[in-house]
Length: 350
Ligand code: NAI
Image 1 (cartoon, rainbow, N blue to C red):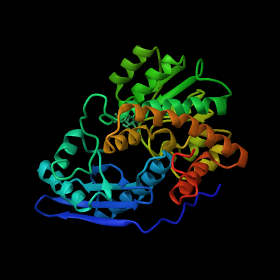
Image 2: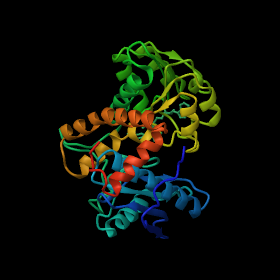
Image 3: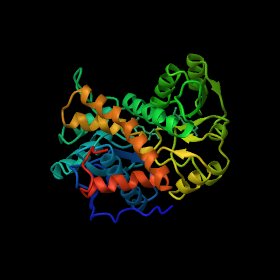
Image 4: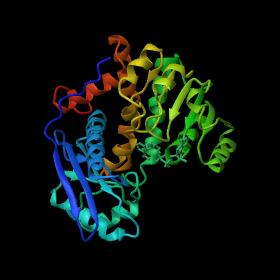
């Protein structure tokens, strides 16, 4: 399968540099074709500014595709901040970041991501209104995105089960890797739907608790991807579907919350050849950004529920098209997102 993406439109690179606040990083706005570039702010340790740049470019591009496919009126962007050596003044750092976001006059909307929290976004919000992922009033959209992400993955998995396994999730064995904010909630939804659960997490107490709550079996962290299950749900880290996993896994369906599940794009083709149906990660895990974008647009929770509910239908269309055209679902999803970005397909049209 070809994996080449659409030539990127000229992105906007904004260097974050404030010596006093010890802010060093990059905002990359990959696309504003559909609206302001939206994507979280990552605060992480990087060996140099070059790695910051590479990560920000990759993540911003991913957000363009995710937002487009989810039918959101947002482009893609990402902020990556290089974590200074401790001790550092977190409030000063995030204030300087907020000022940088404000200078972009709404072309970039930020939120929490790996390494940042709701409290951090409250600091950012003192300097700009172009920030989401904060506490919200009852009934309004926003707040913790994880329940929406879990629900979206569940809808996606139901559609995947029909397409790949020929029936509903009841009685199917689902191996869930990672039992954090999203994975634990996904287990709840799957148990309710009558699925048999196999769970694994590096946190042994958490694993034992989830196993007890839902009558799940426990797999080792090393073996969970290869477990003799119907479905594998990666909800921990990216890159877990390596060539070795793709060639030897027993599950016929992959559907989970983790970003960048494939260790490299070409693995989508390997999976297809081996008869494994891969639900593209960004199609399945869009619930979080759907919730965050509704917060920015000051919508209510009903609007979020409606959009998250469409994830299943969208996945069904992607999997059908992949089967019909003998391509990988990952490639089909990319092509649909690109058509939406260049206006060949109406946003939310599928
Ligand atoms: P989290 O940090 O709450 O949970 C991750 C869990 O994975 C933790 O329990 C951790 O102990 C476990 N873990 C880490 N390494 C592991 C390993 N090698 N094997 C098994 N378990 C391992 O994160 P959260 O929010 O649940 O997100 C899960 C994944 O979904 C992440 O990759 C995240 O980027 C992605 N995601 C999350 C969204 C959200 O709304 N929270 C939205 C879209 C994507």
